[in-house]
Image (tube, rainbow, N blue to C red; front, top):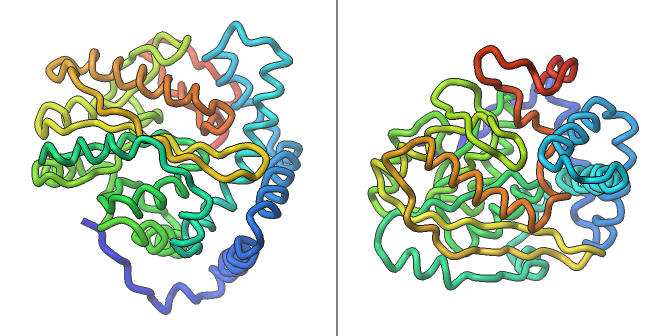
Length: 314
């Protein structure tokens, strides 16, 4: 269990000064009116594509793999829109960490909250199924304002960024759990808590199954989902934080609970999870984190789907 991290004077060391400068600039920018934030964010994101050429190639390759019938013209359109979303994602992180509640409520429309109420009325634990949209940091803050829960995350290697991330996320969460701490996840779900959980990235070959994801037949998908479902028997409620076009704000879409998981079959659970995630992505495909090498891990003996792009480090 990771609660609020205490501020340590070591975070004022000169090696962190550039980060402090960047955070101060971000804090100042998110004080601007939202339509201006939207204009700056989308344009900076599009501009960044010129300097992040290898990342743009990863986005292109992921779209090509997932949607092989998409035309080159449409793919280029989605690449551009995705980089606009990358720029907005930086600002939305600042908004999530620094905006007051009233301002988030002003720009968010909530759809389907009745599904969350119905899930909690059962008295069992609830997995809020997060998907790695570039809006996720802000969406998590908005969802936590409605239902404070327990976040799952990977601690940042940079101590200052880890403190900032922890501080920002605990504005609307009870506490955080390391994503590797499956035992604690099971424990809190058995207590009837709300747990935020995102199984849509490639977390490596250990404890993963290879199942379809869009048009890719073998996508490494965590078996942690099957373990949570089998041992904690929670309800799963997907949510999508979707950015509206033309600076109109956001929709927080809470979907009906998912039932009838084949909990004793890891392959079947991973397959169904990916199907749910696919449907969510299709609600805002340009806002998904396509920069991630989702298909980096391959079955033994199978060649890379990214070629030289595998040399890019996170």
